[in-house]
Length: 137
View (cartoon, rainbow, N blue to C red):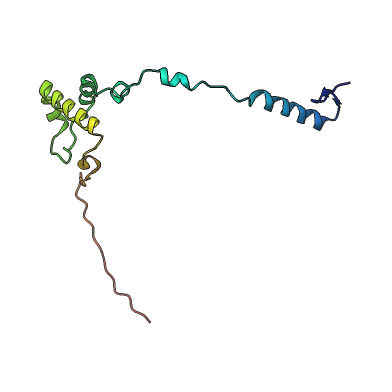
């Protein structure tokens, strides 16, 4: 004999009623409101956004420069990867200053969103088009 007691103490033997009682039991068990003391939040020290979002590190810029692929066409600014790498320490410092200025202002230059693709043909292809006259008969 199997059975489960309901809230009133009555024994349930019907499978559907037993399942419903288990469901009810777990809903009550796991859906309890969690008491919270919001006064604790006032006692926490305030943090500024600088503490949360640090500036871009020089090591990050150096790594990005190191990972640039060579033998590629220059971008909108006309500066190739080889030129950026050749700029050395001074170029890295200039890029770091620029990136941090953009990070602080939270405004990305409009140019950075543009891309231009120029077709590069390795072989010239000759296209011949024959036009034939079609008569309606």
